[in-house]
Length: 407
Image (cartoon, rainbow, N blue to C red; front, top):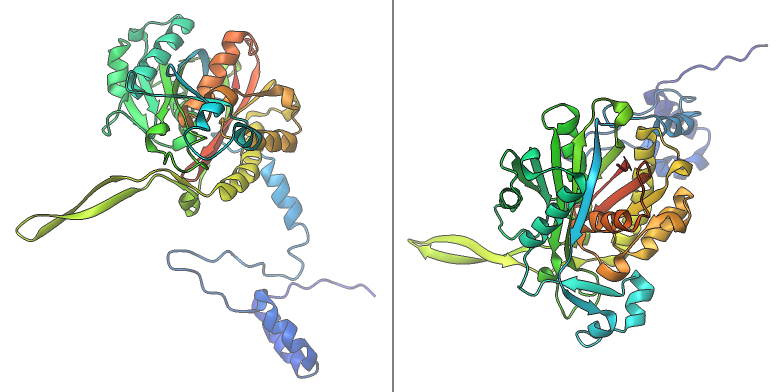
């Protein structure tokens, strides 16, 4: 006798189960508890996922999902551009962990053991976010062999501009990029990575020939210096990288990328505007105020980073057609050495391939990736042709990764 599988519609499952209750009353608690047999209501503005319509449709779902994850996403592979210059600038004022002990109730060992940070550089009014960005940009140009007028696109990634209307045009003017259009991009600690991919798109499609990407922040301006959980982390600095278009994908130095955001987690890391009503006359009231200090739910940010950063790096590697074993260097946003250790371990990349300098510069937000890359290139650790897996992550929440081939 040959048994044949018959597909049963999902609606029929409920009818069969209800009929079975007449003969098997003991099934009632199980049926009531089974979410698949209860009607579901989607939240307003959302739609429910499609249900499987046969009893045997779920057998290979997990395998199919895993296979789909390993497939490159169209449009997120190599872009016809490559990095050819990088540099950075940091304030002269240096505050060590020992010095931090005089600022807030903490110890040098407590900071180092939990974050890996041993010092940070802070603006004291002598420099600004803009002047740091300009110095970093000038250094990157010098290394690239290009002049300011050769640049036709400037992006400044920052969450703490000198001017709320944006710093990019003034940075472009300061380096002589008279032929460039310039804009700011705000994506917190993911900013430099998002800006690099954005510039890469313009270079890839022929709209631009040479682009300057800057990451610059001064989050020391926005910390509560009595909150030891945040003030020990954040610092100031700027890093810049020059990208140039290539003739073909064979020459490409941006091999693949992936980016994500999830505003449901924004409350875990934020710098919110706080307003007060002010009457301006005639009974009209407006809201005015300023930004509150940075607030962070450390445990949630740590869980987010150690969960989603390895995933997005794996996605970018797949899109680039690169295996983790082929990566020469892993370069993450310089937030916490523990996060770097977990991410490297989950990717199977040894710690001796992980680039880091947060011990000296702390968390400089959008500037941290280019600052670390600039030091690694200057020291000779990163060489022409090296493959670098980069990932930025932070407020938003936002996170992304790109695979670079240097030079």
